[in-house]
Length: 200
Image (cartoon, rainbow, N blue to C red; front, side, top):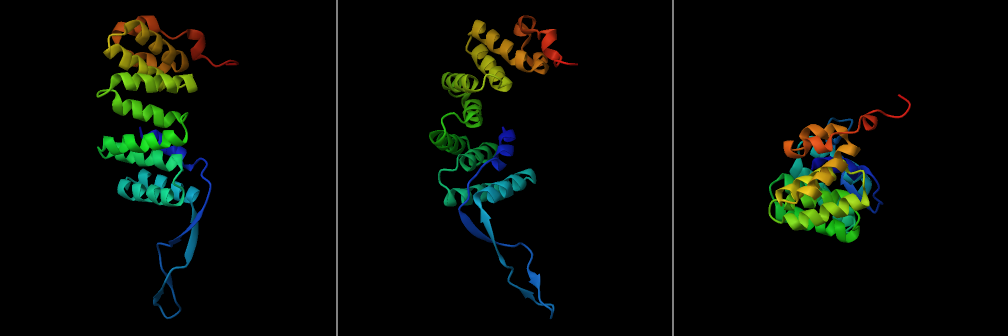
């Protein structure tokens, strides 16, 4: 679920805020002086939050993403990443609320749709199925979403639909074939032509 955080550095327009540099500057007499103020926009803060998350400073990352939201309450990437951190910290209700907000801003935000579906798979599988169907309708090449849809349908006993979803997942990404449950594996075998890129 964390993969989506890489998207945080995509596009974020920038109101300006101010942050203090982390290392104070030294004066000629060896005393420290206050560091100069550096303007940061939402895009830079999203990048900073991403770096904090990479270094496993999840509390710091969440605080940074929330600073973005103080500047830009309609920033879907910041809401999404608050959701990712909340889910990672075992706060599914907070994560779902953050994903919901991101989806109100952009109903076709597939990363938020997918992560929300994964969180709901056990507690509300029918809603998870609906979210995953929306995801693959928006992005038919979302192999992991097809796979998760197959898995959720299989758990609901909807084998024919599950088989079709697994087949679509494997058609997009043949490496997923080994993860397809045994009962569906033979009927979802990848097409040998799909494993070789044109021109090779």
